[in-house]
Image (cartoon, helix red, strand yellow):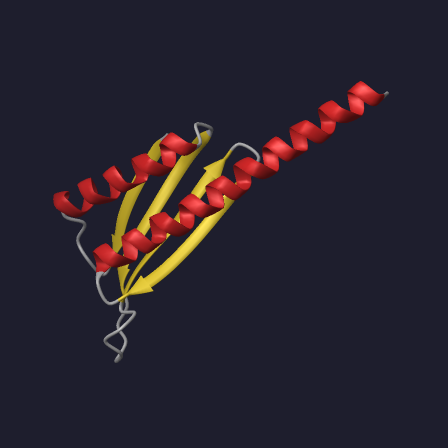
Length: 111
């Protein structure tokens, strides 16, 4: 799995990089067919205090891509929400692949 972490209008510190990497390990354990992961952390220049910090991730998987974006007033909370959403979508993707494999297997047995 290739993991790329970049920042837009902010510097990605080693502590932030370690935090994202450790959280991403949870998702990588759940699904082993991850090809590439790109995480973009950014600081939006808006007047509102809430949802200024955003985190977005594009995950290239075998059989499709997943894109998730979250915003929050705290960057670490945005990363936590991002990982939760990403985890749910990976589980959903994995279930679809299992269901598809089951249906294909069922068709070959009945034929």
